[in-house]
Image 1: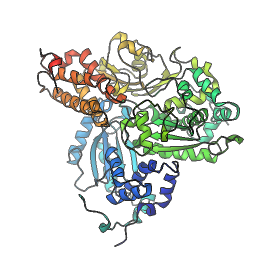
Image 2: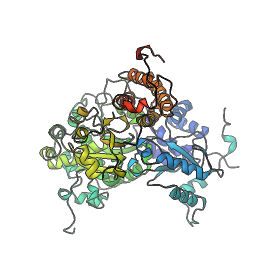
Image 3: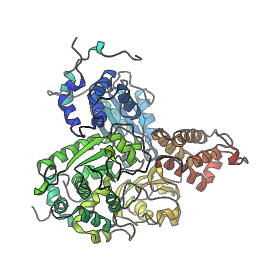
Image 4: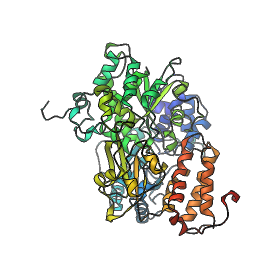
Length: 195
Length: 435
């Protein structure tokens, strides 16, 4: 079993370039970009990663956890690898977003907020994504980032999901896949839930 | 360069120039279209106060919603306390607003040049672009553009042979509407919960890291290069006397052609909705207009309202504010209680929780709207909803609480028929109701 690699080591270069964006006496500013970094691997921020960030920034793990709790794009629990986040706010709803979300979930056999049985996709309703003129629309969040999908139909979305289920057999790894390959988590380093 | 290559003077647009200058998002093309000549000019030949005066003379007002004169805001920056910072507000989270994303994706260098000029005007050596976390891809593109500018010697140390140095950085939020409020945004960059500060002090005296800070919206800043290049008098040929310039109107909701439309301030709702937006589907009628997104009061869709010019002075005459000019069109098939249920879900979710009237008020308003919409209201739910909204008014640190009640109070007052069908009128006076 390989050893847990702390964030500061695993992403040493990126941690340093993030810290360089802020004045030396304002390290705490780096908490948000570091949380995105921590989330890259598993799609959520582990307790160990929160402790790593706290150590880097010389703040308490509780302060880091409060940031995770406040901002909606950080997660402290795992979910489907792909989070489909459909905007159902007023302008999108006026263009059929509620029906789109309902039909999508029916097709996937899940309720809003649930993951598919293969654990690949979680479908969520979220607040405005600044794509009102291209509704129905959603963003897909993975640990690696976010991408927008606009002018959607249930059919186009199901086709997108199918492309995730059967990814093209590419010869080359993406940067993030290489990144993942670097890290094999040591389960003993991860405190149990509720500790 | 081929002769057919349009120059900036040929573009019909001031902000959305990518629509008729192909590839203006590439540095070389932007430079061919006078890009960074304004920044070079100010750094090499103008005093910071001259830059501020030029922006003051243009009459440019903040495009993020408040409409505050931009040059005046810059002039407030405390010169006894250093260093200074500039923060570009790219948090764009108001339901109905999607203009800044198009600017940053289509015409990113003009925006970044605007940030740079603002920084020079207040002698800041570092500026942050705060993007909502959902704009992840936009932020990565901006990072690349900033690196290109540094490589080209247009950002960095000792610019154009002067002593002036400037660095630009992006900072991604993570899904919180409240961070569009300028002091919450500063807290967020500082690595804290995005909660508004008590004001005063205002950011020009106590901003980022406690230092004097200018916070401007993306669209506001994108106006600045051409104002410096073409002059305040050119800018004043556009728009109205008190609201000069163009504005990007984000048109959404029940229209055939939703999208961003760059038009002179003072264009009527009718022209936007029918000429540019292609009217309403299925020949439906305009029931209500929300000119400032979900934060807006509901304007009744009368002929007089449709003929109202969209500028900062005229929109209040029909009972709303222009705000960020995110025009949501509501047709006659939509029930106002349903609409309020939507906006209240948003504000309840986005309340940061700092001020009790907003935190509790949005919660209770949402539940009342749910009950009214579901058709199972208690007898006095509408009066109670109005009462809760009235109790939020004027009692919160920032505008979010205020925004949450605009549609509620105007909706109940201006569309009473919609509430009669769902709630039984009560004789009980509001004053006797309590939570």
